[in-house]
Image 1: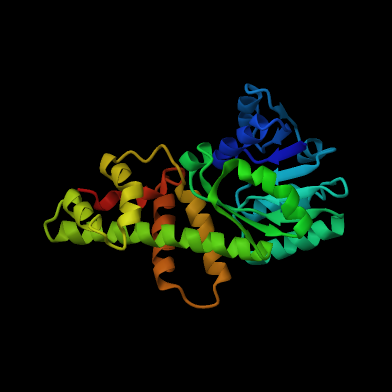
Image 2 (image 1 turned 90 degrees about the horizontal axis):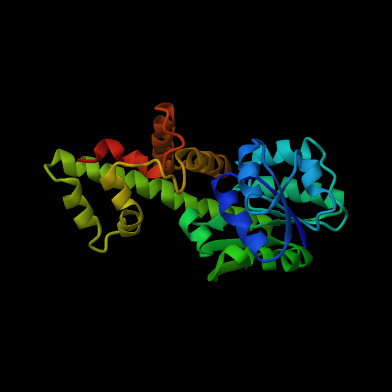
Length: 283
């Protein structure tokens, strides 16, 4: 198929090659030109605008930085899709955003499918991401062969609606935000009581509720090197803001985690791996 791919951030760059490798004709666009030039090395065509990328595409994939970027890139520009195109939006957005996007897509005569991913860059490159797929029967039928290219088959889930897919993605990322904050506080508590970081990690790895996060990020925290961002502070903070906006009830744990992420951003570390939240407690 002819596929337009909009958004070459960290995750976009990890995914687009899988589409090209599967034999599809891919045209990419990104707001800044450097990532487009990088993908050209692999024989993927670049476009200077979303309109040029989308022209005659059967499938459009968007991997943008939040719902505002989706609105700015497509809706506010009134980018013209060919009738019958399937739009697969991988961008992390709120459930309410998917309802707006789906209504806009319907008015354009196209199918909207929301397909957020669960996981970071390493599983994306290894085709081992969790993938959620919500949309019309026809849209999902077109989307599945594409999103399956980076999915762990056991973690590929077709859900009722795009809004359900968005909500499940936010729930997954809430777990990341709150558990890295809990690990940070465990390190702080341990340091105050005379424990080393290794003492704390050893305890948390003993089948504790935080075992998964320590397994995932313990070595990064020990090293103190947060530059190779599998999932950045900026991205997780943006997702946390969507969670706060979506919830109808106070969320004290998430609010504390969100504040910690914003504090790290204020120190100029927004592009660091989100594990940097724990840096001050490392001993």
